Length: 367
Image (tube, rainbow, N blue to C red; front, side, top):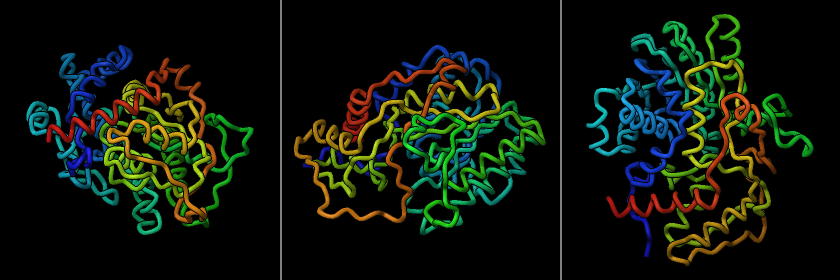
């Protein structure tokens, strides 16, 4: 018997999320206070990270009487609305404005914002081969248009949501990677379209600071997880989570011996909020420093499966997936973000997984 049958798996409407929001650090609250009487524009608002950020900011600013208005720019506004309950939308209707967004078009008609966050990105590997131009446009045209908008707005800060994948392929001795370590990334391999264009987006941001003095922060996450993930996403973590919830077996498509770094969404948003008010004009790794084998993550999900029926299986013959950029390790150093704003990861993988599973079980019960 499946544990979850609700199709709206991206909803944030459970007590688990509210508890996470209420446990945010004092430093994050202080960062929000610095943005009192301001407007934040966020592209890619219906994505996992951006929609979670919107949820946290609106709830916290309401709770602490901080005047922050959010302009949420989303290609699919209905998808964004489904992440929030009707009560949430009604409760925050005076501070949340949702507009359609196309990365290929400038933001000429949009009211000015004090802070601009560009989080629109096609980060699903299955789309890189089928939609290479759209993947590139979000990271190039989208970055150019949002930078122009930030410049016209005389914005206090511009934040680009990038990825730790921009580091490319580096020798094993280089790990954990700091913000200045880069390796090879073959531009003629089609699967590199996302990472190559992310590198370009970062260069555009840095160039805009040099020429237009737009202050910025670049955030490079690794893998972030938690309530709000789309369990129908074909990447490994959502797939493992879905199998855990439904009681299906987890069928690994690899040997599972690559290391990944999994950061709980509450910890990520805590750092994100702190990086909005002030432009340090440099990139920041914001990820877990704990290395976890993919097969060990899968085993965690098998152990935590509510039905106890989920088992882990391996392929007889592993064939490389040519649509993905495969790294054996993704570990990055968090020393810069820790030294700059004092942020630290506080949620263990075990506890984060338990909370994530609890969220989806509650979500199914509520809906």
